[in-house]
Image (cartoon, rainbow, N blue to C red; front, side, top):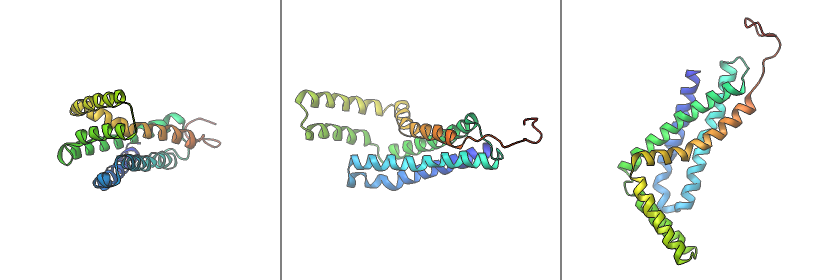
Length: 180
């Protein structure tokens, strides 16, 4: 299990971090909303490695058999490795290449509220939320937790789906296990 989990976890992590690095320079050009869509699309693409990893485990280690529990364990470990790669890469990018990300995003939040025709009360509430966001985002533990929560839920859902779709009971007699 270790080899499968490490292989597919690192492939997924390399995919999500590589695509993050490739798309980050275009965020200012395409805008925050499109950048967010593109970012989540890359996360979903990388999460597909969970499915392939669980399938590989079933075929190569499980001899064509896989319980939901074992499939979930393989998938969630792949997801955790990929998520750790994502968080680690973002922390490096944030602290070296984009140290003013939080401030820029806060400005975007307020501008978006104003452009949407929100009431003055709503704009003021958004300004307060933007200040809170900046303050919280500079806390490395909160920053890492929020970054983790961008990627992990998608991997979790793909893990559940993969374990359910790929579970497969053995056929006939399992040699050496005493099961029939």
